[in-house]
Length: 102
Picture 1 (cartoon, helix red, strand yellow):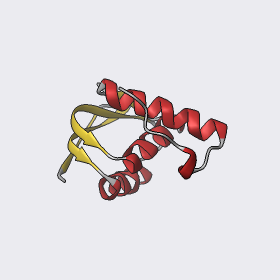
Picture 2 (picture 1 turned 180 degrees about the vertical axis):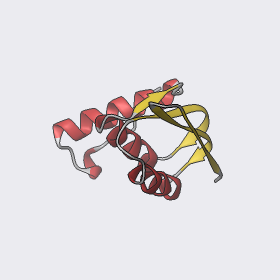
Picture 3 (picture 1 turned 90 degrees about the vertical axis):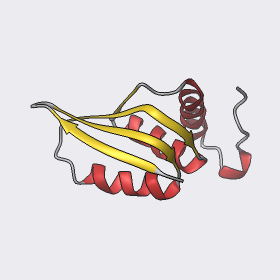
Picture 4 (picture 1 turned 180 degrees about the horizontal axis):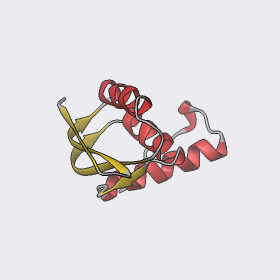
């Protein structure tokens, strides 16, 4: 799987543009990159994302809950993020989860 991460910044916002497939390895790398960013407005642009795995969805749900803005998110990814957020709020365990239906 290949994931490209681009970074652009303005005076008040940092945008990470993601493209390709995002798996656990890429989500972990992105989490490390985001941890180094100074406090401020951070956005993830998912316009060119083609595939995500469950670990990536878990990461994206957590990032959004932490205040990171997700823009240009494919609808299927948005659906999974919403389901992940619901699972987290309900305190469901990994084994209790079912794949969301498209």
